[in-house]
Image: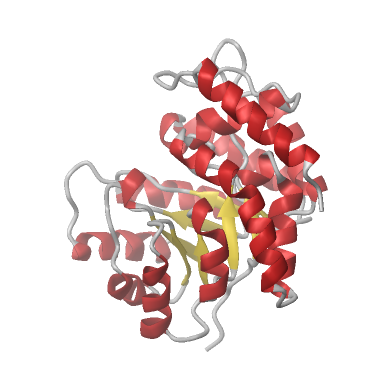
Length: 298
C-alpha cells in the first residue's frame, strides 16, 4: 500500500516573531512566510523548535497554524507541529491543524516523566486515530526528553498514517538502521543541521531546517546538487554553510535565527522569556559568518 508522503526537499521552519509587548506578531509572521516561500523552499513547517512551540499558549498556536495555512494558500505543503505533554492536548492540536487545512502534522513525544515505549506508542496511536492527515514522527531526545530507537520508529511506521520520520539525534547510523529495518522506501527526513550532507547520502527525502531563514539559496543549492547526483558540488556547498549550521544549533535556534534575521534587516522582535537575546560576542561572530557567506558565492 502506497503511503502518503507529501514532502521532499527543503522544509523550512519559520520562527514565531513577537511584538514588544510579548504577543505574537501575525503580520510579521506573514512577512517571514513570504520570505521563505519566495526563496523557493519546498515546504513550510510552523511550530517547530525555532518557532518556540512549547512557549506558546494554545490560542497562539492555533493562530499561527491558521495563519500559515491561509497565507501559504496551497502554494506549498504545510507541516504543523502539534506536540504536547498529554495525548489529549496533542489530539486537540492535531485535529485543529487538520481542520485548518494542514497537509500533515509533526509530533514529538514530550516528556517530564520518563515514558516507556508502550506509552509513546499509545500516544502516537491516539493522535493517529483522531485525524486522517499523515503524521511525521519526530525524534529529538535533546529537546523532547524521549529517545526513539530505530527499531521503535519502524514499529511506529506500522500505524497507517504515521508515514514519515524526522531524525534529529545527529547520528547518521540511526538513519541507516531505519532503512535496514523499514525498507529502502522509508520516508525519513533530516532534522540535524550539521548532518545535512550525510543524511542525504543515507537516503533522506528532505531536510527540515530553520537555516532557510538566513541562507535559503545555499540550502536549496545543496538539495539540487544531491538530486542531480553531483556530490562533488554538494560537498562544496555543504562545507560552505557548515559553520553557520553548527553555530545556529550550538547557540539555540530561536535566539540564533532571530539574531541572524535582525542582522539581515528583518526585525524579529523580542524573544519570549526565559529566552534571552544572543550575547554580543556571539552576535558579532554570527555577523561575520553571514558576511562571509554573502561574499563567497559560486
